[in-house]
Image (cartoon, rainbow, N blue to C red; front, top):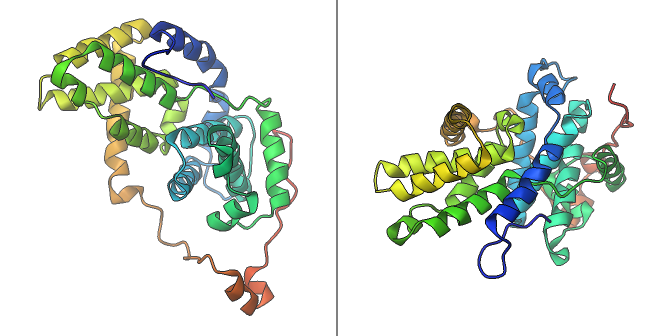
Amino acid sequence: MIDTLSGPGALPFAVQLKALIDQEGRFQPKLCGLRLIETAQDNGHRMTVKLREFEVKDLLSLTQFFGFSAETFSLAVSLLDRFLAVMKIQPKHLACVGLCCFYIAVKSAEEEKNVPAANELIRISQSRFTISDMMRMEKIILEKLYWKVKAPTALHFLRLFFCRIQEQVDGDSKSILNIERLEAQLKACHCCFAFSKVKPSLLALALLALEIQEQHEYCNAEGLLEALQGLQQHLGIKDGNLLCVRVLVAKCLVVYSSTKCSRPNRQRLRWVISGRTARQLKHSYYKIAHLPTIPESAS
């Protein structure tokens, strides 16, 4: 995994930043593919922005259920967006694609002892495909992404920038920013499709800029502002671009905290039942429907 570290023994900030920047562009989802999703009509046959956002929220729920790291969730979203940007998939395959991206991320970012079995993931997610479907889809995803799993995410940049700012401020200023709060805000941004088109470094900087701006209203954050400007200059990010993404982040966080962001209530509630209960039910109640063949071409 791409690590960003601070403290004794860590590589200098400039070295870590260059390593992330050098890889950032190579792991960005293809804009042409994202635009197809953005302009697709919701007719049940095409991937749409709403479907993608619902799937990411499901992955966030799984991350929280299993107690996995923010790194796992960010990587899963990166894999999902990169795959959706190169493959035209039908909505009926999205749950399988999403769970496979999540499983790949789990195996890459979590300790081996914490990686659940594939059938356990299928059961907990209440999905209607088999382990065979999942293994086949996982292979397709890895092949289409050329087996490049370990990507620099906005989380890597956020943690690196946070450590850099903490090193440059002193006294009470160190306690103004909270990395847990920032990471929670980043998770909310991941659930919004618009940020799939934003470079991870810019998204991370915009999150910090918004938080520092809001905190500046209540306390003296001059040192934080100076450190932020130093990061912006180091990255060569224009004021207009930073302002635009910062506004998007602010809007996203408002929507995410409102009821408008909730999943529609028209979905029927489903229960995960025990093996003993399942054996007492009729076979048709819990029969798994096999997925149709997944086309491997982008057409």
